[in-house]
Image 1 (cartoon, rainbow, N blue to C red):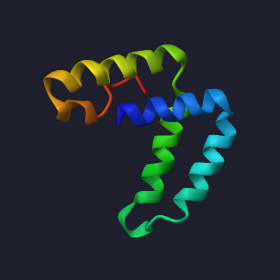
Image 2 (tube, one colour):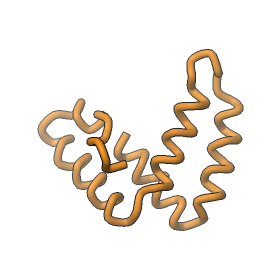
Image 3 (cartoon, rainbow, N blue to C red):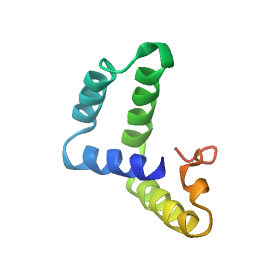
Length: 83
């Protein structure tokens, strides 16, 4: 997930936060609601667009460092208070 957060954050920097959230809402409408996928996508988009540049760097470094030692940790949820 850290790589997705970085990608969403960088996309928001290149376009706008509003545009990323609009597009994620449109994609969320296509996902099956029974599984909670629309809400998960909206939460991911909100988290990614709320990262500041330092948060992006920290997320990317965490993903890179944990991917070398334990690939599963790269997909772990972010620590409390960081995103």
